[in-house]
Length: 387
Ligand code: SF4
Image 1 (tube, helix red, strand yellow):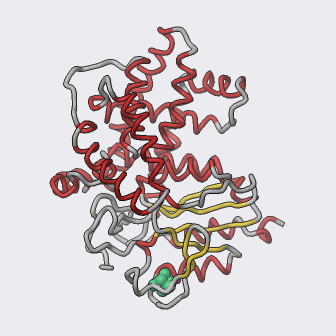
Image 2 (cartoon, protein in one colour):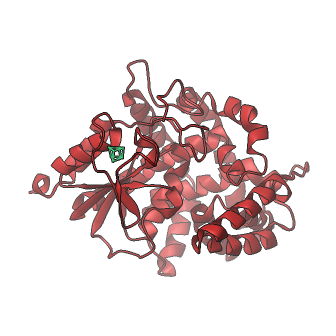
């Protein structure tokens, strides 16, 4: 692992090396975004639809995030969603489910994902198009076919069903306003958070050739507005799930292997469930530091090799386990959804920058987090701090 010598795509750190300013900036933008989104009656209407159908009820702020997500993903990807996208989505998403069967299956499916991501899913049509129900369905098909938006497309499918039950003019209006809000969000988030994501475009440009045929081509080429959406989305989820996290009797921190300072062969961590427990073989390793700190807060730490394998396969009893997911920006929203889906009460702390060998850097860059922030979360959630 190399020490970081400058961010690859995003960086949360200011001149003092800390991320305090970032967390202040994102909180202010989140306040503004939520006020702006809740001005629209479609959020409350969607909430009533959920309640009527007795689907899992979440906080309206999450519905607001999803409505904004519709517009952001439309603006970024609609030109790639073609007539065949719905069928491609059905076919490819069922293939992606085979990845967990074996290492060979994963390799084969990843190869196919790389080919699809560089060929059919990369084709763009030039026609300027206004979002409508059928084109939103096409977009969902493309998102599913890409293999990168499993959680988001599952949630947006509920929105599609909701919209299908409304008069055509009304559903078209809701979709159109989501796209308008997303265009506002793109401008505003660039003003407020652009200084933290200034290298994204250069990274994409410099890695275009390298990413061809790679399974992570779409993931590593995500646009700046998608980073900003994840930043604000993570802040919303942290607020919404905060009380539940604090109340959960057990706490686990899930952190990525890019935080350790030794390569896989030299790291002494031992497997436990879906992750690895640090054996503290290096005093300078950041995983060691997090593990020691979490212990003082009665929390456990598990190192996770890949975001897709976090949380295991079994749903856990509701309300029992609060988790802090440490992740890079693009994994925040899907990670939050997945954690809730598996019964966990999630909070997240962002990696200061991304650097894992699987996606971002040929040798890997050792990553780090705001330790004070993590400690505060865990201390507030300690059973003794609630008495
Ligand atoms: S301190 Fe822990 S995570 Fe770091 S290299 Fe050693 S066993 Fe692995």
